[in-house]
Image (tube, rainbow, N blue to C red; front, side):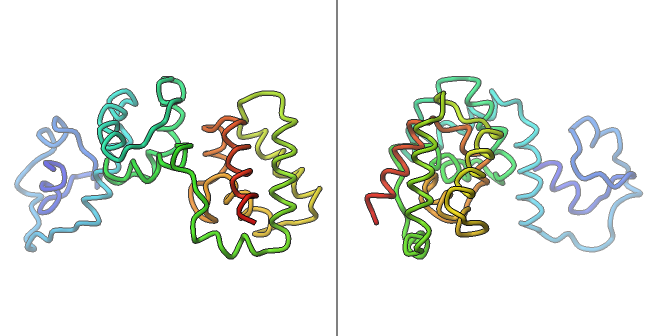
Length: 211
């Protein structure tokens, strides 16, 4: 807030907008006051807050996020693993403007909250979708480990493409629905490595039951 309020009527000599307290004190001079009346810019405040969140060490960021996840009753067993937390925060923090954004992002990796959303209705009706889901499930069953890396996901997606003869949205959106229950959202190459093979299989089985 100090950073935001200062820049409402003052500018730094080098044009930077994210300044530490020490930098604010060192650079401040009354000559750089803006004569125009200060205007409250909520968009800029949210942007600035997002920059500060991204800069936090992951341990501190998680400690601030966790109460929001608990309040939203988002259960993520794998979050006990610090390596998983680090990977998840790296994936999600760039989409956070405030801590209150965390539940919506992290619910996508909570198995207990997975469901096929109403937004997926059109995708469910496509003739290619069932074949894509069945091929995705078969390939997951053959995958040798519980972890699916970003590169492995890319290879699996290409195999689905070849097996089903589909591309573009008829490939990507059914797979996205099979992973997060809706056709839009965080990039799958980011999300899939945060989920286990078992979780991915259970999710696509849920989708197939709805056809």
